Image 1 (cartoon, helix red, strand yellow):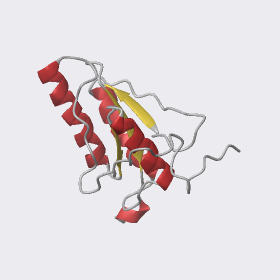
Image 2: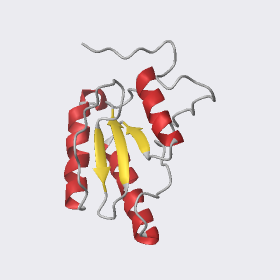
Image 3: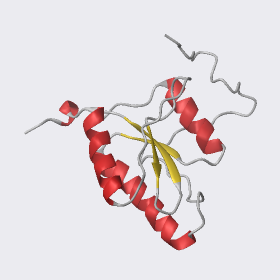
Length: 138
């Protein structure tokens, strides 16, 4: 029997992606030049998009990841982080339910991770992130 801490981020991501594909989502892995953006983009059969960052159970996003997720949310882009398969699937299920009701493309409500909301950015904050967080280009 595996302990919760033995679960890898990639295992959570793979299982959520497998479920999402069965439900008709497109699931491109995304890579940005700047650090900290979510791992994957999910596009529902109804055209809704959700950016999702995956973490190992009990882990939390880095400060730059929190900033990027918050920035996306502040612009009305659904973006979340999850640390379990069930949590990831539940976010996507909620998007499907909102889609079937609204039928209007990219308009589901922003869904935050259960019990771990991502704090909102302050007004006037530098668009490149908090001063104590630097993008690293290696």
